[in-house]
Image (cartoon, rainbow, N blue to C red):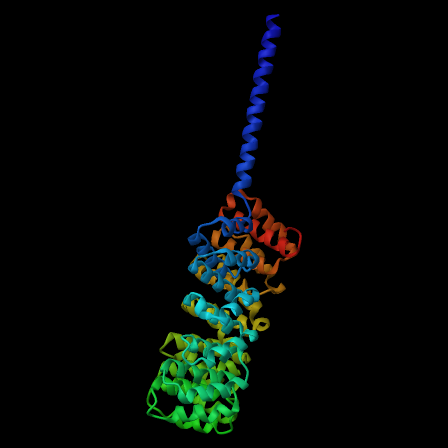
Length: 461
């Protein structure tokens, strides 16, 4: 009987232990589930329940990460919120996302901008301008007709981007009688953006009028370059003789809009201008027009310019030109350990941007060397960030090697490359990181990357 009692006591103790152990395990699993809750769900909940300051910080992160999955949730919040600051931040998100979801709300504000907070109205003008929303044209023209409107400058600037050539005549008439210098400046810029041939003489006269302010003349010069006219190049050539460097910058910006042999000569000459700002403007023109004839002078500046900002802009110009000699030089810069990290990273960035096929395998070889040399960590990270911008099978092998690194930042960069490309053969590698408790921040990052890919594919909601 005593043995039987001891048996029951032992059995009872065992059952209690098993229950307690099971309860603790269940709690541990729940805690683990909470700890590994998806980033997507966390962000949805923060948008719905978070403090205004928390949501504003989140929007900054979303914009920085170019993560635009939350438009529906943020639009709902925009419609509900009474906070001007938060509503303005949400508009910033839709501008960055190039998302027209707030078009209806924008039009309602333009119908009566005085009824809205000025800062919010200003944001919507910026929204219409950046996204060039054509439906904004009609209410903006109504604002133009009210010359006393405090939003006149906003309407002019915005209509210059989303209006039509027909709006130029209205703006030219307004320019004749407008006294406010800020509004006049916006009118000149808008006339240039609209590009109506009938507006050319209006802006050319302002550009040559020395009684006008320097800023007004500079705006008019840049507008000249955007309006087709056979006399523009000759007139700009004369204006380039001005001694003021900022004035010459505007002339070169205008010249860069024109494609003919005379304009090309002016741009190439300006690459040698004494003032670095003029050289920068000229190099931008070379980039935009991909001027092969500028190769020699640009290569000289890339090797010898005293201003690093000009030197690195020359790298971009060489990549845009894209000749074999230009590509070869930039690859040498990217590989050269004696060069600054910035120079190496910029050369690689521009090669990928303009000459991807001609440079990608050499650049992945350079990155491969940095993976085994921690003295080149900064270049390794910079190259990885550049690779992560592109969707291309040529990056698969280097992505695998970044993922296999023991360095936290390198592995994280590998996840960024994978997130852009979703290579099927590398999913096991990323899944392994997602399951590895020792992977630290990269464990959660890997889970988030896989979840986002599956959500985009429609595997999960």
